[in-house]
Image 1 (cartoon, rainbow, N blue to C red):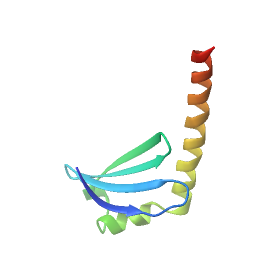
Image 2 (cartoon, one colour):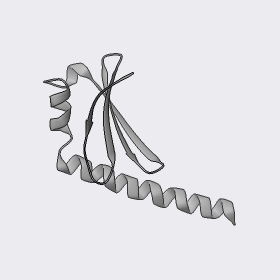
Image 3 (cartoon, one colour):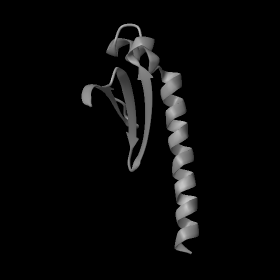
Image 4 (cartoon, one colour):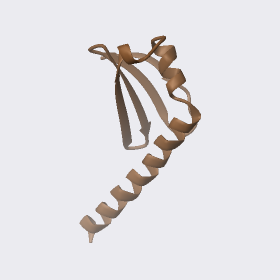
Length: 82
């Protein structure tokens, strides 16, 4: 797996990797991580096409998922810790 690009964002780290004819888009926020895989043949324009896919609406949904993930983790940890 090789890193192709990073997209600056104030709320999370966004990295784009290439592996086995797929783009892997990885979002990181603290200890949480989300990744999305898409075939290179499904994206027109290579990495620039991935940048187009990652519009404001997509990133807003990813950030909402991080909030839900964090809530689920904290709830589970509280049950574990009690």
